[in-house]
Image (tube, rainbow, N blue to C red):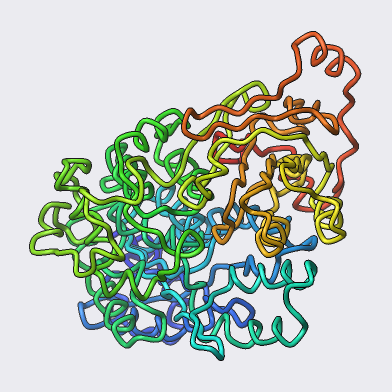
Length: 553
């Protein structure tokens, strides 16, 4: 066993004495040591139940003959961090989670790992750590939140909550109306109930083969979630015995499967940051161009919130991620020969799986669109690409031309939106919010929700070198690369310049001639860094561009 280095032989006697200090018995130390990486905390709704998940995992490990050893991982609630300096600390935690988990796993020489994440950066951070450490690993998440219900019976969720604030500023909703959303939008523990980033990534743990069926969709409050956790605890012992490692599962073909499922589900644009970062840890490079190639042949089969009015609990009842994969297999869009954490292939996992609700998971012959939920655009403002969740864009905004309204930061933009200074037809440009310029690449849920809440989502586009929450809808185009702080052309845009967006043709164009842009470039001076000390300052010096996954170099 890998853990023998701290358990067996005379040289390990001091190590054993410290393990005995923890209360472990000789019998327990003769079994494989399984690290249980639990992201429980008391500030993230998606993580408040993870202590129960960890106990269930440990019961499963013991039942299968292992010794579980729990240790923590951090997690940020993006919703609570939204709209202030805290959002600068969201994306950057992905690397902190990966680094600290790698350190714990290597320092203590576990034989296997069970990862218990749930929310946005926690899932990819732990997947990155799993790829680095590359010992047998399985994932079991905390599960999605149930949908809320308003007084009139309408279902609601956190994206509606943010849009309610925009409706208030537009005079469409009073304080009592906002308060009704406050008390009803997030009714239980769990990751927020739509196809936002957390649920997108949890679903993709199934698609890539690192989690058991139902991991992405079984609601947090269901007892089935505890049974899933126990089974994950049992399954890790099989993976240890068979020496099945993350990089045996997360192959290049597995990442292509994950991107295909991503397109069919209509996942968050943040997956375009996280999948390349995870692949990078596996020694695999995923390109933006590959995303468009996959999107072009993958139909969008699901319209969960914010794109539509179905939620994670509906997807679970319809058959979950496996049912989506089964639909895709009808057109041979997935490689079903790949090994997964079940110890079986994708094809074996999908045996007998059916789509139980063709309204929630559209069949191949009746998709929401013939192409996938995400598109990568290129043009002179984004020569290295940018990303849009096209599944959540109104048809009338798929092609749009309008004047640029330029803001050097989210705070300026949100103030202008709330003050009613944005008009129909405008293209809001928010820059110096990229991985380096932010630093930390803040999500722009407040401005996009304000625009939607004011009823302008079918008239106004937003472009940024920052990123968007999975709860964002509308013509919201993020990850503009290169970012402004790195000298990207988005830093050259001036108020009133005309911008043209053509999502079907994957283009985005600043209608300014090259001679004028060259003159502006000659005058351009990079602003002083916003943060000069601490972790964010170090992060800004090391982080790569968004099109490469914002990984640290």
